[in-house]
Length: 517
Image 1 (cartoon, rainbow, N blue to C red):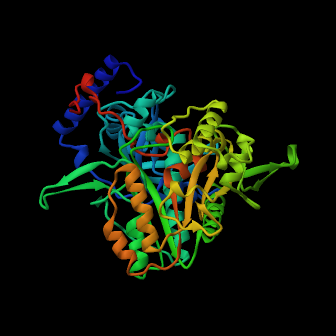
Image 2 (cartoon, rainbow, N blue to C red):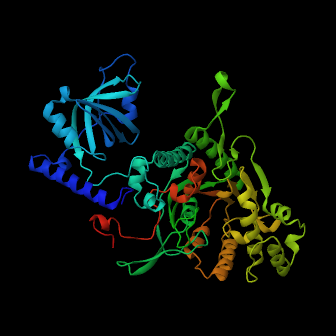
Image 3 (cartoon, rainbow, N blue to C red):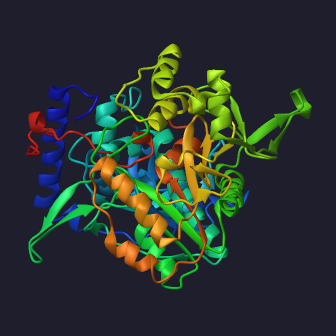
């Protein structure tokens, strides 16, 4: 598929295949060729010393993204992981045959080539490689999308992400930034003596969250497994085993709906620290986000006007939906869940109301209220629909109803709530954190209550582990995909996942490519 019409695309496909056949007939197969690079594009350009043209030699490689043939000399651009670099081809350097046959007639946009040459600066000030030798190392048999229209169809962007990465600079930079975010998260935690561990994806019991799992069967063992829906319970086993600070960055799988913020497989960071609590996690997540905004996002703001205007480092980034600047500096708001509900409903006695009164109260606010919902579900509908989306600035919402999480400690002075926070930024939950429940008897009661409501199994092995003693601890989860939405200004979770889940379809069948069954 491409934005080029099928007939033209088919013609180009045929022409390119003929070029490949001619090369092979002449004794050259590009797919057997290779090149040893010395630098990526931007690293190579950084080597140029002002006024020293044709002194430094480099070997770079990448995909042809612009191709301007001008008689006996031509400028083209290739693109690699770091971005584009300009190349200058000359007939009198390469020789008549190599320039005409190997360069002008054989190469097409999208081909991958390697070149060796010296750096110089053009009259327009662009650092360029003067090519002494080049090699075609991969022939693109299908054309790239049109240069100016680009890749604009959202389905094609996600299905053929490789094309999106080639032609859409914004997508490429966003997904590179995602990689840097994950790398910096690891480094931040390792610097604080957290150990990265790996726990099972195939599990007997889907624990640590309330979600529908994907199911599978292990033939050799003859047993059914589920794909994990959370990292939590195995990481807590590590606390029992004497690992006092652990984290995992791993995939979770939930067999549920998709939305702008939900994908059936997603990446989670979970962190557990012995001898800490939910307030210790507040400090940790605030420090982490300061680190990511300052060192990865690197926002700036303009101070002054005209000739005196200067760019200064900032700790504020723009919220994609509202345009509001989110300020990560200073103190972050902390507010109790109950106080937010009372403020929104205008009812100081909301939590003392009967279920029928709460149904009526939810409906009065213009929301759907199912009479079969439990009271905490009715209240949480208000929070999820009317409160959370309005919390743009960093906000710690604390002391949530105990029914929302059976894995946290009960608040000592309010047995209806738990010692937790949800960090809300940009109108979405970024990080929930708990003072972890380490009393095996209370944990069993909470599990059994949840299992009775949701008909899911109790993880008996985890309870057995708790009976061996787990230290008091703080625990936190951060959805990496949502974090990347926030920090890159993306509109959808699909924009920050390289290959999001899509309904299968035939790919390229109309252009002669094999169909995807």
